[in-house]
Image 1 (tube, rainbow, N blue to C red):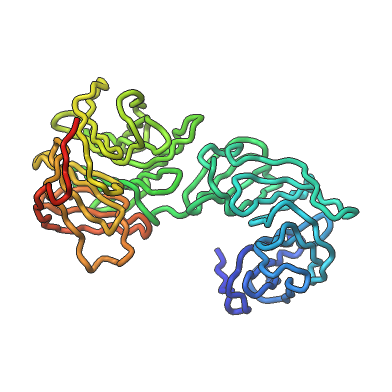
Image 2 (cartoon, rainbow, N blue to C red):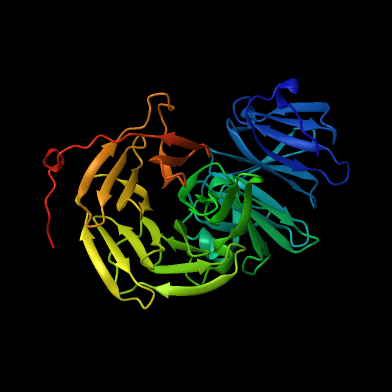
Length: 420
């Protein structure tokens, strides 16, 4: 593994890199400098040239055309591709459809693959030097590669021509691998642990189960001895419709996961084996925001916008209680022994406490020592039963163990109104 400090050769905003396979040299674009830097494989500077005179004032992407022996550069302000010699001589400009965020050249077919800023597709072009335009050859929607990329902006792509593979970079560093022209064969979350969307605690062992906020839905576990480890990816079990994991609950040795594009709840073993899938169609209305499992009553609690449902294993609806608190809730937790439900908000990690009927009991604010932009993505009562809470940040991937004494406030202060 080689790490190159780009500031040592004058690049302060490197945006893309490509390689000349014949020499092994690297070519790096720099947006703010409007330059292309040529480096050896060990990171030593060979040369550089400016792209601004040709019109590429913010070069954002680059690829090596191995057939013509030239560099193809995309600019975030220009609708097309610039061709340069390896020494930096401008050759021509190919008009295109939009500014291109990333480029990749297929040496086996001579096709140029391109992604456009803010678009969920991959464009394929033929390069015809006798004309001035990129020639449309094909277009691939991202769901052609992986359903979970549907309607997601693509940040980058790379081709492994020898292996017949394409690699796609999606939101939060989602890396998807797919055979060229086929559906995805694998995916991994490169931004693993940079944010959480759900948490729950095993009350017996004290293990903390967390759901990463990325599209693959990686389930992590924190134990006292081993610390954090990734256990499995929920997206590996996705159906034809992308299942974007959103909520998690621990109960009776199983992990329950719900998604924000589906009314299904998946149940897994701690090792990631899918045990069953439960459809909540007709039982629950609205996007699932949180899950909890009451082991004593053998009930699954489901939080949606404005309501908490309780469902038994036979899918019988046991209770449906309104929650009229006007907050953007991100997760919930159950303290079955105390008969309380905690709701966590995206705003400064306020914690709202309700009874099992959904009625307001109290509200707690997190300590002022927390970062100003702290945003609660996940929360759970701690296993100690001391009123503590484990809070997972939605953006920085840090889990904080907080002991909070909530203030009991009359429900009228919050305009509580019971309805059925």
